[in-house]
Image (cartoon, rainbow, N blue to C red):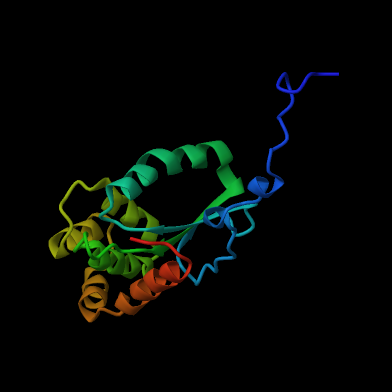
Length: 168
């Protein structure tokens, strides 16, 4: 017999306190045909709502995600959904649209990696520079970017996230 407090967790004084609070509720979040990295059948799927101009999002992509990939390999998958904080990040929506344009040429994650590295200030010239560095078809990319065809998709991701209670 081990006395309580020496090797066993104590029972909660209030059993109601052991129930999850709303901020820890599990949601079944659809992937919504958004870009993903990792095998479709991975047992771990992270659906991330993120902003390309957010320094905390950048830190996660530069420091945490590579560690998760190294640790879990083919057991982990990342689905990226847009959450541009337009009230504080004026370039977040155009950056997300540019990344979606890169997806048309199967270069979403290499392109998004460049955005998160933040070596250049975000803006149209940067989006074009990154597309050129990655060898994208520039005519196709520029047409996509100027058409604004992904702005509704980016906004839809944002609206869905806010419907879940995610706040900017």
